[in-house]
Length: 166
Image (cartoon, rainbow, N blue to C red):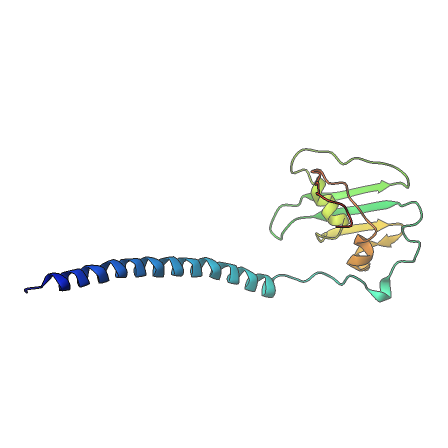
């Protein structure tokens, strides 16, 4: 086949453009695949994750002065694990923290310090036992009523720039 130089130039130009187009197509397909992982994860969270209990349960709201008085915290045979099938982190913990007493929760990594705090804030459901604060079983009240009256000093401090108002 006899090709004149103009035809050879045209074929080479189209070949270079085809290479760039294929590269762009592969990059776009890869980005689409990565984004579909995000969509799949969102669908999993939307359909398979249990929703939190309500913030307020009108029938079981604690009294106005529930936490205004000195606070007593009781853990009665509390057991918890992070997920079903995983080993228990808290195993039949029973303790009474008397009003106005200051305590420190210390232990090795993995001993259950953070799990205990998660259970107090009901971010983790306990398997057995009860947590009672001033005579109220915290599993019976709304999360908003509970969490709005608790605070924790975190292990790692967080610094913010600016003022609180900002």
